[in-house]
Image (tube, rainbow, N blue to C red; front, side, top):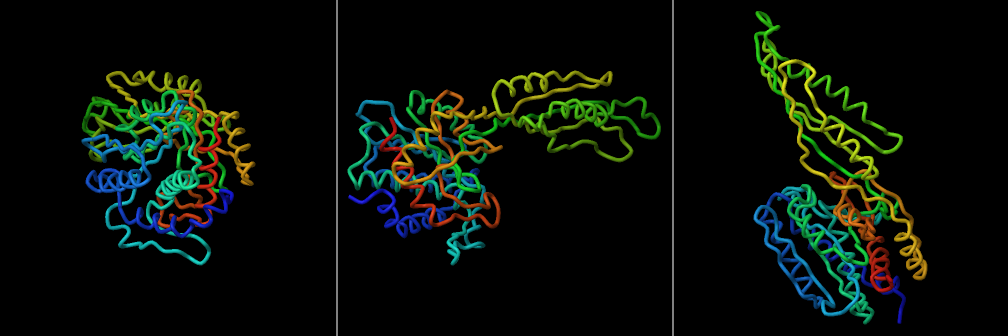
Length: 376
């Protein structure tokens, strides 16, 4: 029998055809009907490959699809995580048609984040089925629908499904040089509200409580929490406040972005952020955490096993990390071995030049198939 790389090289055009189909099914996160169309496509693809399929309804976002192979077998399952939602509005494909360039780059909205990764995972499973090499353990593929807007509607299901798994494979794209992501920073977002008191800026400014002045002092305190050398950042990213140039501002709302490499560091920073007391008498300060993905801390043993499996197939892999989070952050925080960056190589995520490197599709499918087959 041919080796995995040879098998998947022969599937290259079929993978491109499926990728084109998936990109043409536009699926912006906040358009439930559109995302449900993509979910229906995933269900059909799972069924075509012999999986048992569960559709998990969601009211505000697209329904989540779970495909399971070998459900009745023993052993710890391997879980694959993909998201079918994208950041691109309906009509983007018409404005920016999919195109394949002579340099081996294929362009299209959502093509690398992450419909290319979906194609890789589907073909990895298909290849193992075709070759009668699917491992005798459950393989669970979770296709979520709200990753681009925070995974609020899928987080609990991801954690429930992954509980007790031997491995989680996340089909996000790798780093720019093709490295798998063995760590990711934790990400948290906060809303800071300051309430002061309005007054006429000319006649009686002393009667007001200036919300912007109050905020400025909190900004200085928050900035002191930055530790860029060790990967910790606390950034005030948006501010809205004030009503007119001759009115002491009574209200202000700001958003704060926090990133940290480890949960211990993050928890210390979180406590400091939440310790908001007014500087100015009469001011009121309220802060709320809106969203949190815990850090995906590096697990060297997981990467080394993957590296050994890849080497046996003649595939070289490297590791790196990222400042942004993914659904893999949730599973890694549970202590489950997690490999991210298993998707297509390329670039331009969320940008007009979003593209995949076509030759990465069979290469990454071979890697994923080998890991699925040989993981201990």
